[in-house]
Image 1 (cartoon, rainbow, N blue to C red):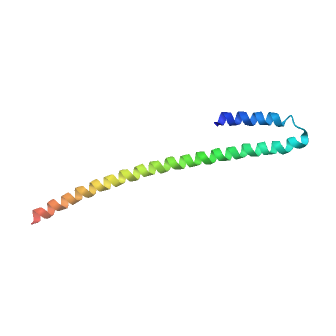
Image 2: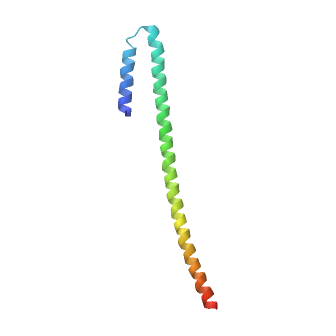
Image 3: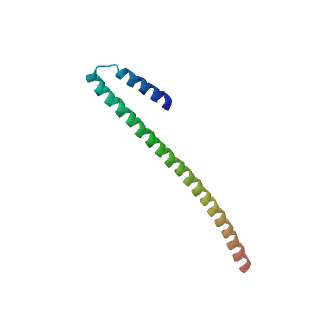
Length: 89
């Protein structure tokens, strides 16, 4: 169920609730409002998690790039050391 469907169904539910007697209506309206609030909090939580995942993915890409660069530099320096030690002998 997407956001539009959820809002549509909730509005439909609120319309149905408004036709009930006042004693029953208050209790169900309160539950519907709480449901809407929980849904909003859930959307915010999911959005925050998505942002955290995006940041984590980017951080991992930077770390992999740095690791590859360090390996290349390490190989280059080892080669230089081997050449230097080979020339001294």
